[in-house]
Length: 87
Image 1 (cartoon, helix red, strand yellow):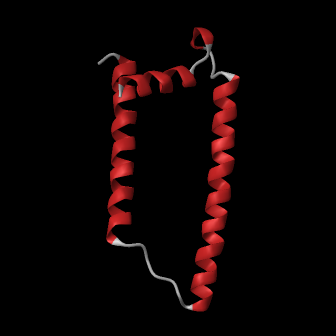
Image 2 (cartoon, rainbow, N blue to C red):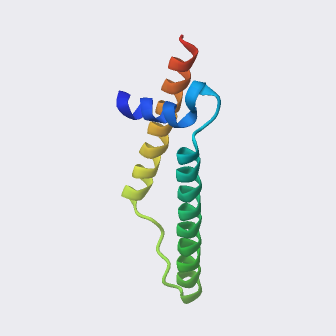
Image 3 (cartoon, rainbow, N blue to C red):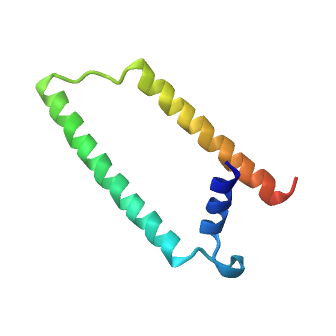
């Protein structure tokens, strides 16, 4: 866990803590584009299912995984803020 958090910190600041490195910026841009494409494909697939009347909402497990993902993200962000401020 600490290694991952250290990598997040390193990716957020380049040498001297001034700005993110080019590699990290490139990775973030590529990840953002891939997520946008995935969202578009999902949107189109759900739209087709709604039009044909075959849409079924996500199940119970999908909701729980999404909630756990959000909570863990908030906890990591809180930890980074807490350790960054030196509280």
